Image 1 (cartoon, helix red, strand yellow):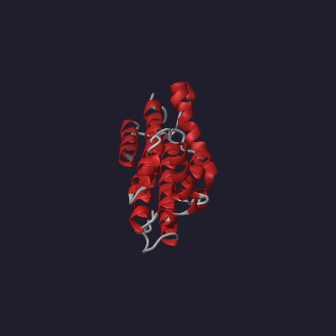
Image 2 (tube, helix red, strand yellow; image 1 turned 90 degrees about the vertical axis):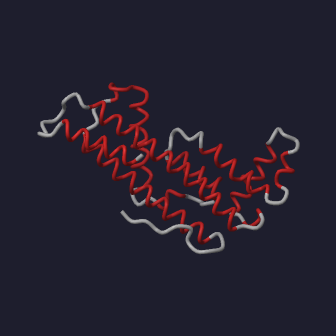
Image 3 (tube, helix red, strand yellow; image 1 turned 45 degrees about the horizontal axis):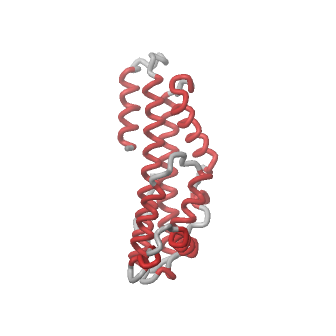
Length: 203
């Protein structure tokens, strides 16, 4: 989806090739912000589900999972209205319970700010504070998501987004993705058997 954002930026530049400023192109840059936030949401969803799968692959029993994940699985079973839910934990059933819970929970993400993501990563992966991996800090992410929310609710009344601002947001989100990817790789390696689950990334 980041490629789509790059195409939006390219389209804006083509339509404003002489650099004279606004040409009624606010809808393009606003669309870019919305698309960029959607890309960030999708990345987070896929990362958390992939993390669950890796942890399940490396563990032979649920007590080998990070403590916060153990608590989350126990809570899911305890609060289930299905009286046979505990039976799903038999054998390797706990792996399916864990993975399905991650899939269902991440699908409800719609405001991917630090206040939502930090506790979510803690519950579903066990990492204490994923924002500690972010070199730009949580404020930059939260401000971007706030702008996206303003656009989603107010449309063109949300104000004009300059192409330079969209480009900055794009670079920042890429930085957040790389930092999150590397932070989770380090966490998984330190809390399970085996090497890093994927290569550390750079810009």
